Length: 285
Ligand SMILES: [Mn+2]
Image (tube, rainbow, N blue to C red; front, side, top):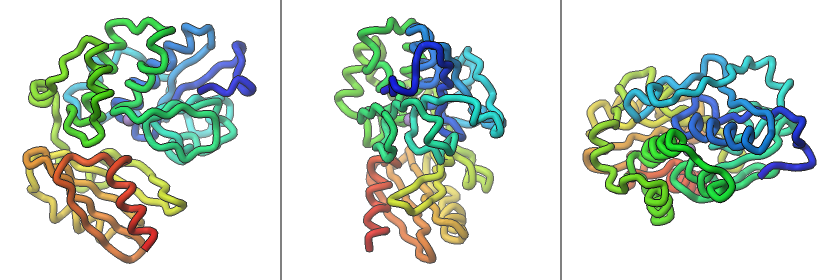
């Protein structure tokens, strides 16, 4: 996970998730920061200036997160060494592979630096699974893992959710019937142009082709035509995902070069595991 040729105990490591961080990016950063400190490595977790977690699918998540990040200015990035969590493409954060000392992720690896990958529902679960035997996760950390897992798997509804996830959640001592948490914490995305542009925003590189991507989490399809138009008329390559939690369907709108494609999944699809492989088939044609 850590490249021991680059990192030693005197070093100071900044843990960072992807830009426009979601709950999983923040929680994974906090956990890894705590684990590094426990190992005697000086560490903080960082968030880019103007990038603090604003919107998520988890009601009032900022109330549960007690840790303060180091707020990082763009021009200060070269002064640090970074450990990436919840992403492994530097274009989604610090833009410079030479500053990376390691990486922990649950998205398929596309990087060449030292990294640890496991196919679990959240990066926080990967961190738990990896360090559980050498680090004592406290109650607060466990709760954050559960919340970030609920958020990243859309309350266990994502196609990514697996038996292995369930076993780890049980081991952590939490409920594996997620429906009541969905009722209590799920927040619908407001259907407006700002969210079309920003909700869940990520830059995604698929075999060298660059896409912008957002998603809308709602119950139903009210406003879906506006979102479809937004993607269709985008002047950049774009992956737009509309998740309908009422019918448990995913509508994918893809703008690639001058063409527009759409596809449907009869479940809550995973951007990493279902949608990107589909877009790969479009690129190959
Ligand atoms: Mn994640």
